[in-house]
Structures are given as C-alpha cells and as structure tokens.
Image (cartoon, rainbow over all chains, first blue to last red; front, side, top):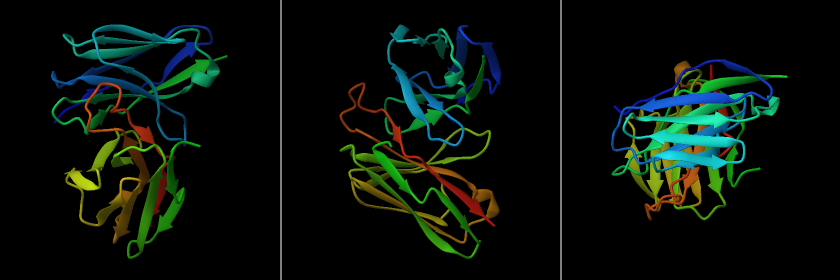
Length: 112
Length: 117
C-alpha cells in the first residue's frame, strides 16, 4: 500500500512569516508530486507541481523535492490569513499514472 | 466555477434510497475519477475511467456503481448505502494518457456532501 504522510497540524504561523509544510511518501518510484490547497467546505485546488529534485518557485510558493529522502515540502513566504486552509500532498506513480495518492492534509492557520 | 461541475452539492438519503451523483467536465480531458473524502482521512480513490473505460476499481463496495457514457460525463449511482458512507464525494478529471509531465494534474469539482441516515 502506497502511503503519503503529513502532519495533520494545525500549523499556526503569524502573518508575514514563512509556513513550512512537509510530506513523506513510501513509494520510491513515485514520479510526480503535487500540493493542493483545500479551503473548508471547498474542493482541492492545485497550487504546485514538481517532478525533479530541488526547488521550484511560483510566487510566494516554493516546492522542494528530495527523492533520495522521499520527502516533498511546500514553503509559503509572507503568509497571509487567506492562506489558512488544509494543504494536501499528492504523489503519482510511474506505471500507474492514473493513481494519485493523497496525504490526509496539514491544516494551516495564519494569524493576523 | 471550475471546469468540473458536480450535482447535487448536497444530498441526504435513507439507506433504502437510490440516488445518482453527476459530474461533467468542460476541460477536454479524457480521464475522470471518483474520490471519497471523509473527515481526517486521506482522499480515497474509488474509480478511474480513461476514454470511457474503467481502469480502476479500488475495492469499492457494489452499492456504489459508476457509469461513464463519454469522456465528459461521469455518474455514481448509489443504492442501499450505509451511514458510514456519509462523506464528501469528489469528481476529478485529468488530461491523461500522454504521460508527459504536466498533463496528469487533477482538477476537482466542488463535490457532493452526502449524508446517509
């Protein structure tokens, strides 16, 4: 069974700080990695994807991937109260590319 | 509003009822999915369809019956459900099959919040 692990939180950070969200996965052959944001009562929304080791930046968001250690992280710079949501980590295999495995999510609270 | 539309948004049903959830995607994708989201649990993949063909049934009980008449529409037929089936049911789609990085991203609908009494 492929597993994706996340700390459920809540992670509380003050406005303007950097929020760091972490995710580990069990399947070494995983190839694609995603971060989804889910506001309460809403559906998940894709915010970042990463495929290669290293960092990928998009605005205030930076995704980091380390395949050797099997972890992927999301950094949110200059956190805003509107970033308060649950962040879901998802991984996608190589041979079973239709299967996306999700973590249970980390709840982030950004305090004004 | 996203390119994936789900109806109804909320559904309350008794254990003896029969109901259907509907999903339509306007993104030109060719893969569609049903996911179940329960409180404090990871999203659970239920079914996957590629070009209208079912490619994944993740050991889902037979009281859930999917139907995919074409690449744009997906249904989930429900009958004799149990209270533990109460959850948020999410439909998703992706541009699939080419396996090029960047084409396998999931786009979700708004979900159907299902309550089984």
